[in-house]
Image 1 (tube, rainbow, N blue to C red):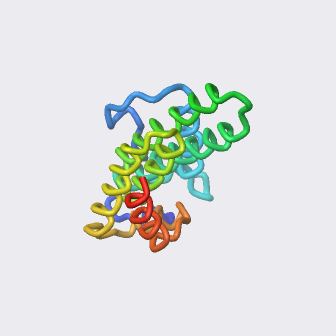
Image 2 (cartoon, rainbow, N blue to C red):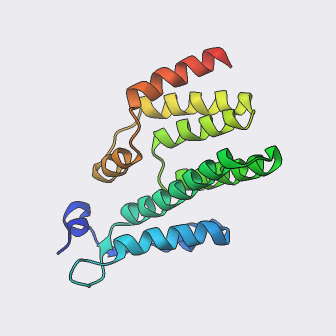
Image 3 (cartoon, rainbow, N blue to C red):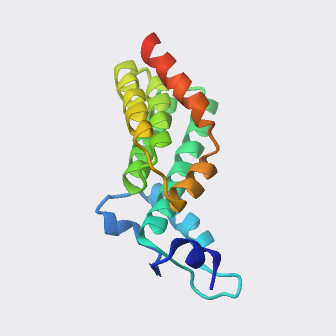
Length: 168
């Protein structure tokens, strides 16, 4: 029995992204599939089984990695138009990631992307949503694992969100 099985209890095959009813671009689907394949096999080659929430968290994480990739690419662009296009894709992918696994810190990340795109009113709204969701957040084991994977100091994110709301 693999670590995912031990940690997540009730078992089922990793969820396919189409089950949530969201449509992915080919690029998003490619990142998600590549990320899912990382978690799909046990060291002995047998199929890994996770809970529905665990599977959705894996999909969400793949979308976050895709969004991070797009932001890195946007920062390298000599053209503002191309940079904005990539940033827009990153925002949409991040919103889909939140739909699959609603970790509040993802709202803070989306707010930062919106701010980068110059949409300060929406950024301010998402910083507020982040704070609202964070204060009522009761993480379970899956949440804690994937929250840690995001690798953001939540105390600093809270301070930043409050400051950005005041400044925008």
